[in-house]
Image 1 (cartoon, protein in one colour):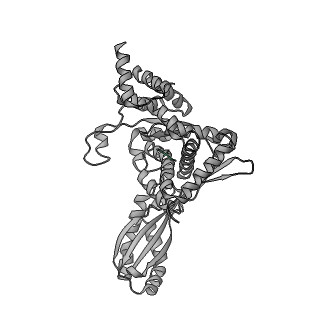
Image 2 (tube, rainbow, N blue to C red; image 1 turned 90 degrees about the vertical axis):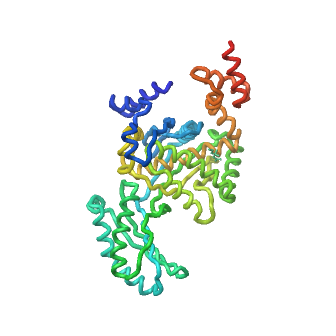
Length: 407
Ligand code: MEV
């Protein structure tokens, strides 16, 4: 399909209204007048390709996954892995409640026993006060849930953790507001001053998990399964490999976060700090089951929201969310974990069999043709010729372009 036909298909599958479909077809639907209210010192807007990853079956539901990214082969790799996962029922995924951690730093503490007792005697009041900052959360039975005291005697420092159920929000704003608010009570009641009051991006109480099984015959047979297991061991024992392995996971997750205008830096920070708990290692886990098939799972912090943030202020983002079709933060977290798993499996499978460059360069060949100056139909033609010849490079594309234009 060409992009217009794809959009037509997505619009009909996702019940987009004619207005929504034409907004998606527009090349620059974010007016500068609006962009300048979103960030500071705006001079223009920046376009990035948005593609749809297909074949995703997660907890029995079909999804079309919007992905915005500049790197070729990510959308294809995800769709490919999701297609293989369908053969065994797709992805099963779950997410915890949306518990975020707000940190309050208290400095100059010398009597830790006395301080802890005082804080614990104030705990109920702190909870009640924190919950005055969000009527919506409080009314829904969510909001501040717990207060934990962490002591650092060498630094004369106490770090309080305010645990907040933020439901369908990403939660940064409400958590930061609560922390700033209750710190005034803490200062007044304990006589100690507070310093930082900010959420932690190590959201290890807000975790998404996904699992999928890939049949050995779909993967390339027992030998490839064994090579994949060897590749996986490398990402457990070697942080140099783990970084690249986890980068592959984030290739998928970030692309969905960018498409839906979520804070991908927060998820990156959470993912990598979580991966470093016992020395930096893989966020996915690979195992071979009794039938010799490959079972891949992922556990990853997933502080994402379906309400608030830029999602509501950028018009296209609203339609993109409609295409994705998630109705709450937990469902969204399940989708993101599944996409990360899919992306990682596709990369590791390719690396452990034919190597990554064959598929990647084939898909990247159109970018190369464009870098060499090819336009319109020339792009496909140069790409096709380079793939046929097995020589995919800008210099070869330039030569081919010169010859093509002479004809
Ligand atoms: C490239 O963007 C991502 C990979 O390097 C991931 C990996 O090595 O697992 C292919």
